[in-house]
Every structure is written in structure tokens, then in C-alpha cells.
Image (cartoon, rainbow, N blue to C red; front, side):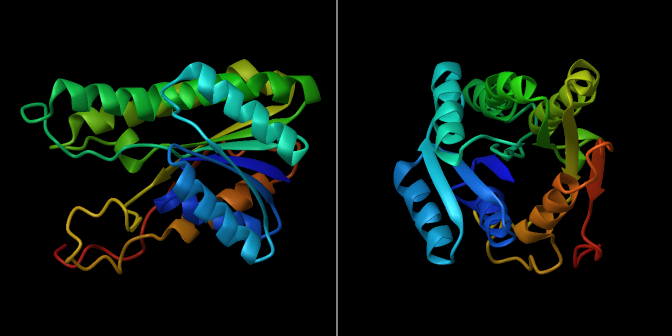
Length: 234
């Protein structure tokens, strides 16, 4: 199966691409940093996986469409897109700047929309495809002190739920995944704190692999995945 992962040069996205490649998937990686992207692809290839990269700013619709087309050509097609790219910014409405708000919306929502719009014609033409959108627990329940971030993830949730009805008759699946706290390494609020209780990128990746391998006539529309243990202070 050929899968494109956005935001794949670090954190959850890098873990997703690496895990899927080890599990037999061919992966296309999208990220802004060409250098980091090259390193991620090289690491996958060194371990015997198949990986191609396309540097792209997902906030640019035309650039995103070109990256999707490039990776589809290099992979020999595309069966799934995992919309993972996103910014985590936990600031209240009192503290967040307008530039930070725009960055959240442009990346977490518009970037996901542009990538989805770019891949859907390919899925429709071949009569199958799978979109996995990484939302968040914060896309289902309130996040005091992080209202702007929660707003973008609630938007991803609503987009995903509505999209199911728009594309399912073309054989296209849509799955929204709602992770709890993930130790992505790159987005730790306090590097000195204990993060051992959190989910790992590999936990998210194994869930994605399971969803992608579901029977063709079935649709897993939503998956909520939380750490088993509570935070040390809970």
C-alpha cells in the first residue's frame, strides 16, 4: 500500500512514516524542511523501506497539489493520505497573537484541506482511497487555555465527519483519529517533565496501520486513542 504522510520530517509524522515503512508500506513524506525530509527518507531507506520526499509548505495550495502529484508519480500511485501536519500551541484567547492564530488555522486546517483537495481526484479516478485525519482529543472536548488550538481541531473533526458523506460513494474512506497526549519529542511543553506515561508516535502509527488494513467494505470512521496511565500529578 502506498501512503503519503504530511508533517513527516519530525515528531509524530516522522514516527508514522518510519513505522509504516517497516510494516511494508511504501511512503511519501511531505514537510517544509528539505534537509530534514532528506534525512528522514534516508533513515527509512537505510532500514530497507521505500520512501520518497517532497518539500512543501502546506499553507500554499498550489505547492501542496504539486507535492501530492510528485509523490504519487514516484510511488506509482497513492492509496492513502495521512493528514498529520499541525502546530500545537496552547495559549488562551487572552495571550495568543493574531499571527499565532493565523499560523494555527493556516497549518492545522487550511493545509489539511489543501492536501485533501489535491488527493481526492486521484482517489476518485481509481475508485478507492483512504484519508486519515489526525485530530485530537482537543477536537472533541474543551481545552481551557488552548481555545485557538482546540478550534482548529474541532474544525478538523467537523470536516472529517462531513467529508465521509461526500466521498464514500466513490469508494473513498475517511477516518478521524483522536489521540490523547503524545510524546512527540519536538513539541514538549516541559522537556524536563516525565513524559513516559504518554502515547508514542509508534502507538499512533500502529493504529493507522490497523485502520488502513481494515476490510475493503468497511469504514472505521473514528478512533480515539488515549494513554493507559494518567499523568503523574493526576
